[in-house]
Amino acid sequence: MQDLRLTIKENRQLTDKMWKMVLCHPDLAVQKPGQFINLKIDGYFLRRPISVCDYAPGEVTIIYAVVGKGTKVLSEMQIGETVQALTGLGNGYDISEAGEKPLLLGGGAGVPPMYLLAKQLRAEGKMVTVILGFNTKSEIYYDEEFYKIGCRVILATADGSLGAKGFVTDVMPEDYSYIYTCGPEPMLKAVYKKAETSGQFSFEERMGCGFGACMGCSCKTITGYKRICKDGPVLRKEEILWED
Amino acid sequence: MGRLSVDLCGIEIDNPVIPASGTFGFGYEFAEIYDINCLGTFSFKGTTKDPRFGNPTPRIAECSSGMLNAVGLQNPGVEKVIEEELPKLKEVFHKPVMANISGFSVDDYVYTSEKLDKEEQVGWLEINISCPNVHGGGMSFGTDPEAAASVMKAVKEVTTKPVIAKLTPNVTDIVSMAKACVDAGADAISLINTMLGMRIDLKTRKPLLANTTGGLSGPAIFPVALRMVYQVAQAVDVPIIGMGGVSSAEDVLEMMMAGATAVQVGAANLVDPMACPKIIEALPEAMDRYGIETLKEI
Image (tube, rainbow over the protein chains, first blue to last red):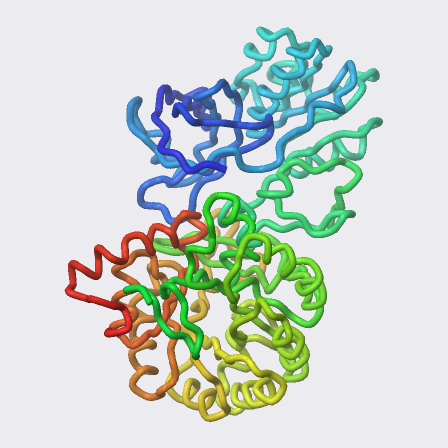
């Protein structure tokens, strides 16, 4: 964990709700895909946790949804302005278990962490299939980027306006070696049910600190209580315990 | 002894800055980024007789100048704290630590206090009779002077270390609560725990917290905390640990001027993990500015 003052290099709108921001600092380090950074936005007490979409030494890309006043302020920030952030938070995805044909499933705001993951898996020479799920055509973003790094991309929209009509679980291929996923909880549940291999699932929860101190984001797992921010956000399929 | 040192119930601490229970875990997360031995001490995560998961999520909500939490005393239980957490803590923290203790009955408090009193690392026992987020315990002891006194008296009988009563602000008369605790043997008073509050999600028309209500902390409650510290300081002659929204060296000085011997820092740790070392570092200069030679003279 580092607390750094990052400089905004890019901040632009991708879709109606989603924005892309590139932030830099010479000491910036992200250890794994699936980690997040926690941004301090002026005028708001708690930080805003946002998952890492892409990373190169000294530079991190985040894609965030404008859902409230805090993220609205973030979307209005200009290139060259700075923002305080805790970086390198969360456990992230472990790519060592991917096998040869990993299947990645990202839904809505859960798409971004799939990108750095896919990039690292491609760098290891894996055959990566990515299923991206959205509600409708106008909400789609980043599909091109996955093509460019050599992934097989399958698009699904709930209303069928582009790609297959349905959910990510409706278009899962038969042959894959491992699952990585991030998205809304109903989607994670559906993937869990249908998955024929082991996998890693990234969860979302309202956080206090983001680094394991406050117990604000705890969940129950097969292997005991876990903090989504510190022991997660990525849980292994075998340890997930669905409540209700 | 340095300019910043203070005496807390017979134990000299290097400075009056103490991370508050529930915002600092057992210290390890912070030890990853700074040497936590720079702290006066810290109050560890509220510990109960039995393990507790706490409340369902969401447990956290935000508001202007503060936050609400309804964690509900998640902790591994006193046995695990002694077997696992304290040995781990020993590796990173070499000063006496403040044990924060909660319960659901007088017997619970007695059981947990007796166990932690025997631990060499523990310097003080902070008895939390003020948690607003659990039912049938916690705050219910802190809103009735007789119940508070019964807990203090019972804990004092089984312990040798200084006992601190941690009070809730959710009462009409804080002074009578403090007096009842001191009369029952409390060696110090810490206040204030969080103030009961709530938020509603406009879209769903439902409370933001799964527990419906939660405890408000952060700068929003600082003036209330300061007022209560002041009132209690006028009425009792034991040390007072002031807390509630403290987030700067100036806030520490203000708390001490109101009558606090030491000061706890809570929500500020969650927003800025370096909050406490920054406050400690800023204290000497702030003291110079206001003509304060040593903190003890306040």
